[in-house]
Image: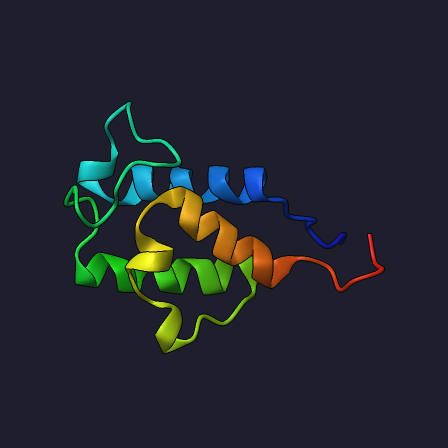
Length: 94
């Protein structure tokens, strides 16, 4: 089995797919990388925890308590950037 190579675009697509499938308010056609997740009501505090569990399981990463905040959970784009920083190969590897 080959290890998945993630980039920010594929991470964003995975996160968007999860949010659209899992959260009723995320099913609108207009959700994109900049759609506010918390401010729009798509995610509440329980939803944020669900997304944390999904991200950790799907991308095999750990998200520290201090990373769970509006800076990273404002929109799918911010989530994708955070995850991309955690799954990026070490310097020198491609």
